[in-house]
Every structure is written in structure tokens, then in C-alpha cells.
Length: 291
Image 1 (spheres, rainbow, N blue to C red):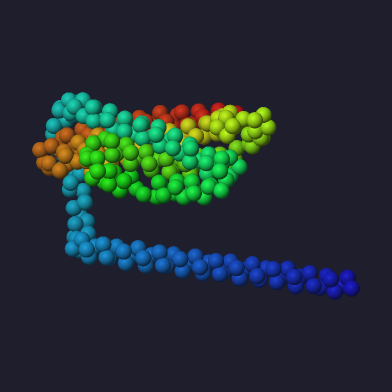
Image 2 (cartoon, rainbow, N blue to C red):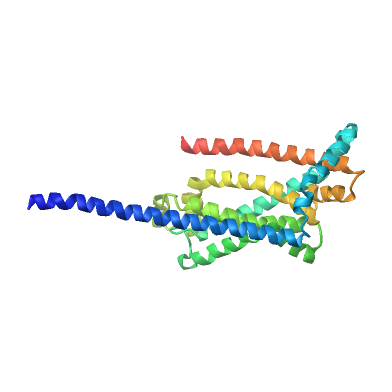
């Protein structure tokens, strides 16, 4: 009887091994088919886009560096004027940073509320968790530029539509990230506060926020970096700030490329500065939390 058991053991191992290899081969087949479909879709989409663009992609590919070269050449020829031009556009830079800061603040508060109301174990109304999560999904699914274009049609051009658009997208994005952090929070302080009769707001402020605050601030700083770029991009659709000035300088063409160069330098320096500052503080927060 023991010999029969020993004889059946290798057969069982062989069966498991053959089944595993069959699953591996099936996964490889599915992965290869998925990759093939992706390549086909990319190639067909490129051909369609190229045809709608009058087939000019390949014809104009060799000219891709002409426009940047013109901007750099004119900016270099008028390099003596760059410091004055940079100072000229500092108010527009301040407007861009203000848009990013206000939208991050408002969006962060919205994301905080959405995260606490959409997290299992913390939500005030557990049955409404899917609703708040879908609201967060919708808010971050719509690009900022689409929201800004609709608001510009209603409110007119300026920084307000850009601020609202970025704040809406920020609330959705931070609501998702904040919720993932809150799900890992220790519920014992919350339960202890609940036993003393604390309200839901008191449980969140005293029991949850002290645990998640470092990660929340870290994500908010990261989002602030992103929002500076977003506010500059939205300027191209008339939402004010450096992007608006850059669009005007580039649309004018030769003769104002030195202004475009100055705006590029100012924007690049600002983004690098805030990236470094926020990265430094985020590292401090994460290291402090780990200690």
C-alpha cells in the first residue's frame, strides 16, 4: 500500500507541473495577442491621424527642430534683453503660482472630505461609499482643460476658470490617494473615541488625521507641483498666467521669440524650484513618519 502511495506521488507532481506549464503557455499566448492588438491599434490610429493631417507627418518630420531653433536663435541674439523680459513677466508667474496654490488648497480640502466619506470603516454613511467614490472618479476623469473651456464659455477668460478647473480635478485625484492612505489607518483610536461618545468629525480629526497627515501633506505637495504645470498649460486657452503670455508671444511669431524664450526660462526655473522644495519637504515627512 505504501508502494502504491509512493508511485502515485510522482504522478501527482507531474500532473501539477503539466497544469502549471499549460497555464504559463496560455498566459503567454494571451499576452502576445494583447500586445499584437495594441500594436495594430497604434499603427492604424497613427495612419488615420496622419491621413486626416493631409499625410504631412513624414514630410515635415525633418523640420521638427526648425521652430525651436528659430526661438533659441532670436532669444540668443537678444540675450541682453532677457533679464528685463524676465522681470516683465514676473507678475504673470505670480498669477500662475497663485492659481496652482489656491486650486491645490481647495482641491485638497475637497479630496479630504471625499476620502473620509469614501473609506471603508471610516465613512459616516457606509451605504454611500460607492457614491462618493464615483464622484471622485468623475472629477479626476475629466481633464482640466475640458473643464476650463466650459467655464471660460460661462465666466469668460481669466484665472478663475483655471482655478476652478484645477481644483475639481485635484479634489478627485487627491480623494483617491487620500482614501488609499486612510484605509491603512489604525481603527483603535477611532473606536476608543467612539466609546467616549465623540462625534464622527471628532473621531476623524483626533483619531485619523494625526495618523495620515504626513502622507496627506506629501501628496498635496506633489499635486501642487503638477498644478503649476497645469495652470501654465491652461493659459493657452485664455485662463491667464504665464501660459497666456507664452501663447501670445509664440502666436506673434518672429520678432517676439525673445519674449517666448524669457517665459520659457522663467517657467522652467519656477517648476524646478518648486519641484526641489516640495521634494525636500516630502522626503522629510516620509522619513519622519518612518522613524
